[in-house]
Length: 468
Image (tube, rainbow, N blue to C red; front, top):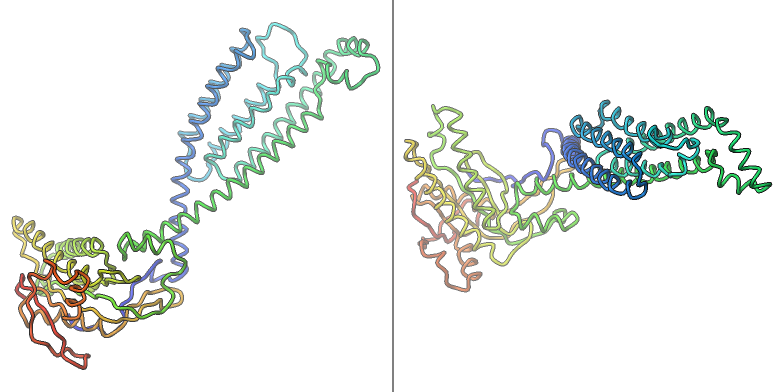
């Protein structure tokens, strides 16, 4: 692998081909998927809440009305349960026409039960007595369960439909039955005398349009309030989905513990700064010859196996995957935040990579696949860190330390070894470990080597294991 002079960069979010618009589209798709999943969960929760509410009402109704005609209302509860089951079957992301129709059936059935007298009731009560049972409060049950699964627009629609259906029901009762019990009303009025308010309070024939209007107004207020709450909840869900997408995107490059730190800071990468960082380059030796003439699917499968193992070791040792370089990759330790064991983590990661490749070769051998040989270069020193770019942000790791690590990886061919680490990295790792550690047992000191781009020769340590 040749040395690299350009900045080491990687995207933090979005599609690099689409820039900021691509990021917004990705977030939008991610948010839509989250909303769809939320709708499915909310609908199931709403139906379950409906069934629980219906069960509670079925138990309390006989207590409030211990007569056989209450069975009419209990049977009606079965219809509401069936409508809920149907909503669960036709429910999908957004609101479909079948769902809207079933919601309208809910409200129409509730209006019918609340306005039309029970046909099995033994007494011939005036229709105005229907409104004495305060059946309108059950509309709030339907409205509350709807907020669990539907958008704020649907909640507004439910409030509007309820107001319209209730107005129609009250109008029907007032227009067609106002005169049905005129004689009874006259007898009551005569008994009361001139107190019109008392008459209105006890008159069994009165519909009390004013009270019914008040019910509608209160219901609309509650519906609008709940709609605002649902809209705010959806906005928070979309925002949360975007944040989770950003965390997922960060997890492609950083170890989980670093992602957790980044998620707790506002724009933690924007400040340009200088830090001491461990840089690791690794490459598959002879990959060009290996890929020549082979099936492309086999070549890609090999690359994926290699990258998967290398990525796992990088994250396991607290490193940052900077970028893939075809059949190789670059990783840093100490970015975006420096730690107390960056050099040691890099050294342990490199040795774990060699062990992981040995395991992979052990798996490949029974299949008749040739072994993979890798080379690793490690260096520790000062780099410049910070965001670059406008529409597509890149986190750049720049400096001679990066180039030196790349050239140390290339130097493994000359020494016929699997890994070369600079003396700076080894000494830093020793200092972090307190002077003694098994991590240095396989390292062999070599004479200083001239590295292109550096003013003085660089002390190196090698580890055998794979012939270059």
